[in-house]
Image (spheres, helix red, strand yellow):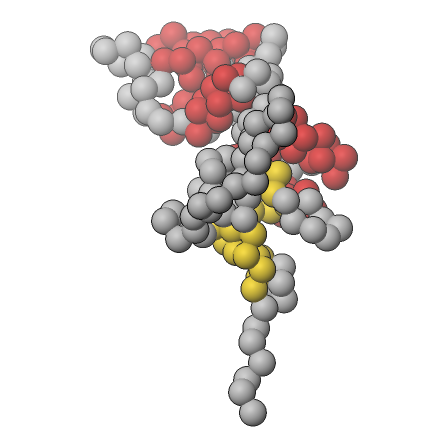
Length: 195
């Protein structure tokens, strides 16, 4: 029996009485590409069917849906980068930081691909570009309206908890324009000790 026939056999006979796999690990630990990254290859189609039959939470499937909902095709590289971005909650990062994370996780991706992906994610509303001055462009996975603390010496960004900043008087907006977003960045540095 060939490897392909064995995989198809597993799909046919791996169903439990209620029509779904009983062992999620057996489904996801194949040598085939991740199920939600299926293309035209017959084995990828089999993997995709296994993914559709699964009732457990699946990060790849959820991220694939998130990308599709934003109008992006869930390619393998986009999914791998999305796992790094959204796998551990909200984060602030630069393209260089994400590229280093990808290399550390052995994801074969160029820095140019990282920049292009971040641009696509930002244009699709999945990321927020932060208004920091300096040579680096920062991004935020939290796209809701919120403000930031920037630690200058540490080159680190932290969200300001809700309820701490309010803006009571806004300047007049020119005719034909509207306020898209208000971003406040509070820049912090270590204070000098009193002499």
